[in-house]
Amino acid sequence: MAAELIDGKEIARKKQAHIGSEVQKLKAEGITPGLAVILAGNNQASRTYVKNKQKTCDKLGMNSMLIELPESVTEQELIRKINELNESEDIHGILVQLPLPSHINEKAIIEIISPDKDVDGFHPINIGRMMTAQDAFIPCTPAGIVEMLNSIGADISGKHVVVIGRSNIVGKPAGQLFLNEDATVTYCHSKTADLKEYTKRADILVAAAGKTKLITKDHVKNGAIVIDVGMNRNEEGKLCGDVDFEAVKHKAGFITPVPGGVGPMTITMLMHNTLKAAKLSISKI
Ligand code: NAP
Image 1 (cartoon, rainbow, N blue to C red):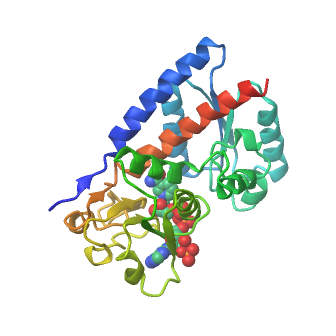
Image 2: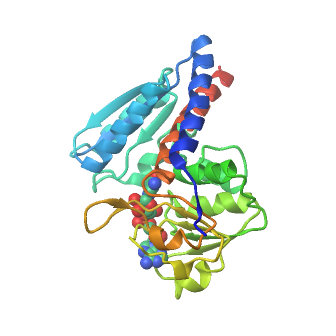
């Protein structure tokens, strides 16, 4: 039997419609949510991501501001810019597009962003709040994964979740969110000996390694929920995930496609966080 497809595009469309109507309510109170994106350097992939973020802001009635800085920008210049945005009343969310040029200390830069405007959820204060299950800005990709699971009515409590990948932006926070939802969580990474031994015991498998066809049908338990975060290019240059979709779809219970799975949810959760930041700004007036 083929797995049921988790349609990220459709889930994102519904969530965005809701965010759009919340934006209209805020506007009626005189507040237009505003997102500032800082793009430093000439990374083409980053440029495309930033364009999509701006387009989605426009679509949902939010303001967006793009600050383009040259590859040669200094850490001091970047800090000055972020501090200006921290002070701005029109900007509620600040996003520094990663990766930054190699001479810049990314961790130090992220710490300059006000935690109340940290819509990526990368600031240590938000990470700490998430770890202690307090209200926080949650990193967009992990938040999108949980949102997708909620939308199919998946019961996370008591389930065994295996997360492949331990990056600060996807793997680690995804595992932490599942732990907060009372799952039993196993992290796997590049040093994990015998990946299959872990993955085939997963009720929910999250693949975020960035390796094409890492997950075959032998890695998956019958009926498991398989979430493919990977965004890779195959030999023909086509976008694909970490999961061998054609093989695994016959074994999984639910599966996300690439494209059209986690990707649309990530940008949607950025809009959700920007709206949340704008609402937070009212409560601080
Ligand atoms: P990353 O920083 O490169 O981290 C990759 C993780 O996967 C690392 O923890 C690494 O282990 C682990 N790994 C690599 N090869 C492995 C293997 N053979 N077996 C088991 N684990 C392995 O990447 P990332 O930023 O987390 O992103 C992961 C993937 O998701 C990428 O394809 C990225 O493009 C995609 N992504 C998609 C979205 C979306 O919206 N759809 C958003 C963000 C990222 P070590 O820690 O030991 O090196």
